[in-house]
Length: 148
Image 1: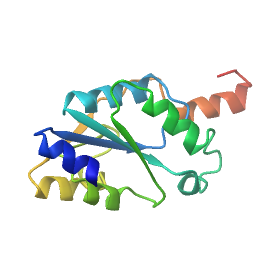
Image 2: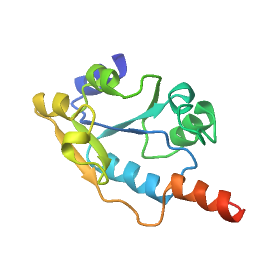
Image 3: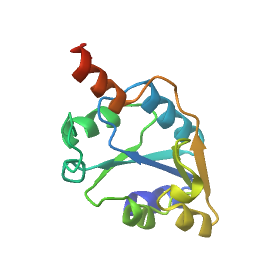
């Protein structure tokens, strides 16, 4: 991608994280901020609506709405929507220096970790913020009728 080539040409380090980021919450913000602290620029890979429709309750917000919210965060330099089931091709194209996922993953479960490590990059499993999960929030709303 031209953007990453330009940043690399400026000597900047690039981090990448991904997810659906539906109903943005403090756990998402913590992950994004942690990823940003690892590099000079942060790219967020965002699951397209088409890839999320395989989940029964998702997406709550459209990919455009989710991308708009993410792009407004000061920690985020670019948002790239991908429609594949995983961001493997995107990670291969972007060649991030740092790949960040939540600590609910193990290293061997992180898509693209092998590519990043092979290029001499780093994979970081960021601590989770307890009590914040879109899935749990949606379950709680469904059961109790609680407002979000």
